Length: 159
Image (cartoon, rainbow, N blue to C red):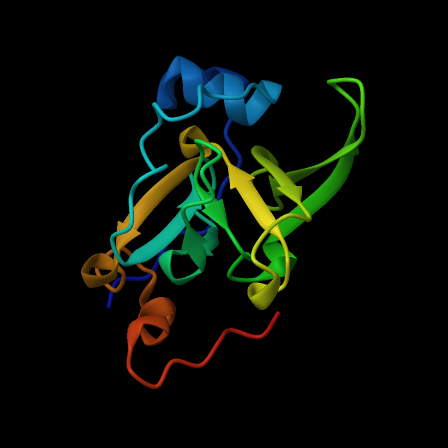
């Protein structure tokens, strides 16, 4: 199993070279990608979604659902300690912005209109802020600790 490299913060110049213009605008300037045209809205392969900047594990396909909003929607993060929430008034009313803790990248927003049976939250996330790692590539890419999430006897990672 490969070990993941520790995250080393990138300069703004490095980020501009590494990310696409859309990824940069979404993660660093809180832009929102267009609904229904993004990479992960209708993507339901088993695996995890990590921060495009830092690589921190954020969401599991096990918690992903089709909310009909046009963006990837999740009922919860893999580990709530990896998500930072803050109030956002950018469109005239209060919303809860969610950011990746380590990469300090804008992910999207969380709303209280998710499936009640799964806790009632909807994490509405921009595909541009995520990178997907398929279940069969987790160990190879240094995320072996998450393989167990996709076995028959799945136990959740403590929040």
